[in-house]
Length: 335
Image (tube, rainbow, N blue to C red; front, top):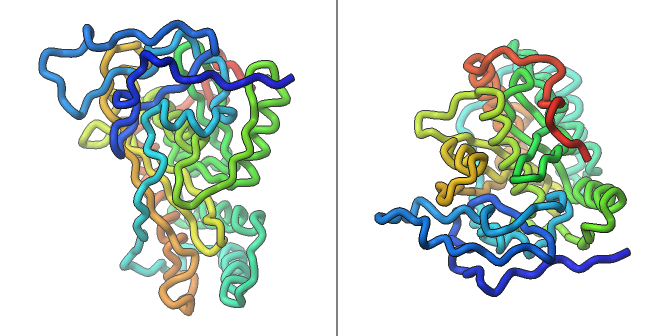
């Protein structure tokens, strides 16, 4: 059975739903949802560009799992389809004690293939990220839970966002979700199998220049996890979350970062009329160092993972002691 994705109500202004380079998080509802509410009557007298109407209140209900949202949902959510990409570089080298021998061997296998111009299997790239996180965390004596999941709550919708690999400081401070194009497709197929009467799986090919709707939903779910577990926001009152995936050539990673104000997470949860914008940025992270001749200690990817492990350790020390099992199992609906 195939259903058609709902269309944007004519009463919803695209100017409201598409702020430049900064995003609220929202979704779409059933084809028979109520007309969009007029948000102008709820706007404060002095409106700031930092605040926008809560798009979540424009829909009656959200019933479709985010992994099955069509690509057009990005526009409804106010997410820019394209983001400028800048390279991420590091000035320091990793110490000899930062990586175990087995993790170095995994890196060398990937590096040899890249230097020889051979394609690197997606499984090897994922194994490199997992081994590097585990090895660097052990060297720093930091506990990084590497099967972390994020639980997304949007109105009536409560679902589990399950990345290919999720890394979290002590299981309560998500720092990175790792996935790739093949994994996104698998998750979409499983979702349509379970909820075929409500969702239609679109064939989405990864585009290095464009934002993926599943990534955006995962980033916001991770910000909700920070708040749910009592992880303190940074000095500016924000939660920083990241999604990483290989580029199409397989020689670098793309890092999508979301800076979500804690105020926004609370506003969405409480159903406020206005929410503060979420900002996004994108960087490319090379696997090999400059000129492809440097060793593992100069790899921008490994240097990034080293930085994320340190961040996860700092956040975990500030968060309350987690209960077990990890995750709000008591109230979350799993799909």
